[in-house]
Image 1 (spheres, one colour):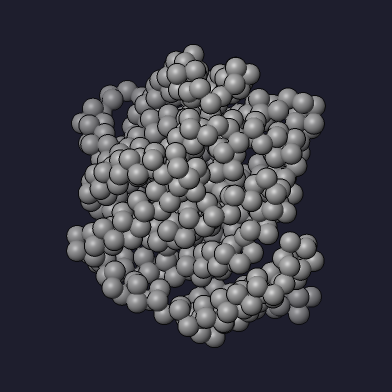
Image 2 (cartoon, helix red, strand yellow):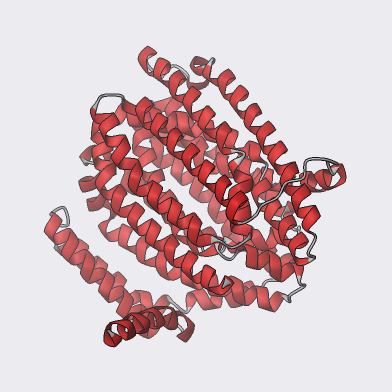
Length: 508
């Protein structure tokens, strides 16, 4: 059953993302035009600041899964109930702190955002921040329930809820935008939807999964141990916020909301890109903790690390090469010509991000081994370097300069130093991993040559050309990957579902 949950969870993750991308392709252009470039930029700017309060969860979600997996392996039901009770109290307290901190920030928007925003924008920013911090504060207690569902590998229900939310969201938001409520209406609807999902998660955990809580005899020894473990995850969260959100803040201070909007659209595409890789790796998080709890060898972990990385690379290489050849036309048609400057920014973000995205299961391996301290300190100093580099680059080159600073940080941190650490300290065979990844190079030759030819000969700004040649590119990519890149395991992931579907159709 667990194996089915893994396969169904991964499949539903991609179905959910596929639906999400389809909805986004239709919904985002309408939303951008209804909001306007300035207000969309303001929304991104405020959201990037509020996101910093998200680090207050201290990474307790991953910490919870680690300790839950340990206690479940040992069949310690009372300790699980105590752990659940502790986490509910902790997250509720953190949520309250986040709301109070957010109110303080909202009262000081002029100081935070500087002189580039108008009086009207500052007033709207204050309201947006108030709503977003309430949304964030209410989301903290939900971490324990979503983590419990993940720890029990009930990925199907998680992804079904996500799919429903994705579909419902635009049907509620668009009427609100058409009525003229703008970004404020957008965040109110998002908050109501998030609260609904949080209540559903809680009900599912308590009634279906029989989640129990024990609030007496607060285990301070366990709490200290968890705080020590989580402190370095917290470090990572702070660093991630600097790397992915500080750019918008810097751009907003020096260039205003329109430049933030251009960067924000590129950042949104980058988020989609990263989510494709995490959809695969997330369903393996409990397995990683279980393998390490049962003292599995580094060879077993290397094989899992490589198998997941190869699957991620196949999908990400299709998207990244496709964006190189078709991305500019896509952005012009999707966002509008006033977002054309998002194209170089998105390339500067996603190409370096590929390195970390095909290795993101390694983060969980570090945490499960309690060897994530090095990464936390490394990323902290890399983030500071990113900040120092990005400020002058942003002043001179705007969003592209800021993205370039982030790219340098990712290449040094994820591409060089972390791979050394994985190989020499964690015990993963990184030479084997990259040998497997570079084995895809012959399979990329044909699609890249095809992309160069198409982008230089045909006008891809015409919708018919864009769709037609885009389909040709995808077909050539998969044919080349099938014969020159994929191993039998990867081919079986495609062949087996097709055979089952064909078998069902024939039997009928």
